[in-house]
Image 1 (spheres, rainbow, N blue to C red):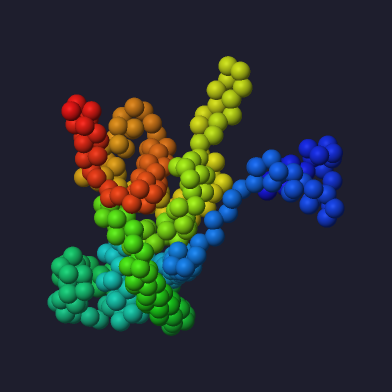
Image 2: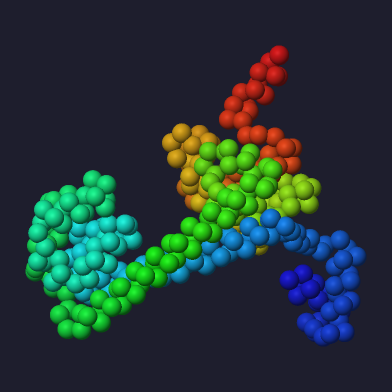
Length: 318
């Protein structure tokens, strides 16, 4: 990236050849403008591979769920009137056991209701079973080739079950690996950070000790701020988005967890939004703050303290 941008400085020409590139690269290094690359090692490298694998399986699962919704809409469009979220345990169980509307329409509402109640732990009851049977009898779904559709649905359900087991296995391996990293327990102590998020952050960052300042680790995440200003015109501050996109994604979803009521960033987030800051921008600010806290905890070998500011005020007063 740097070579592409600097290549015109040496001879004011867009020329790019195998002879010119080494000179440009040498100049970049001599000026000290080269980007430093932190390659994870040991358990951090293993966590990065696990996290990439999990992300890939999650994308596959999302694609399969979308296909499943499309097929169910063709076969039994009224199914979602009762089962709002098709990827939950109960609807997947019903689709697997009763593959067609005809199979549901002949069921006894009491038996089906009891079955649904046990699977959903009380969420669905007899009235939901009665509604589902009634809808199955009068469905407007297609009537021709339903066995082919039913077979497709069964194949997707098998794949979803397999992906569920794979993701569960990966998350278990993440937890075991985190147990070998000394500072991981201090990060897991922070409310809102779970095994997947901590494993992803460590895997994406690698060795925290190779970053001398907070701004360096912000650049790695692409959360460093920039603006385009000139004279009296002052541009809007934005994040560069030039770092590791997966690290930004993990921090963003972690930020969502921490801004909930009684979350560690709830007060900070509400303070930002009360000033008129947009919610998305405030979430990015929370992501930056979270990354700064994580970096400080690992750098100083300390633990997260909820009342850190209060302690600082007490010390100054003393």
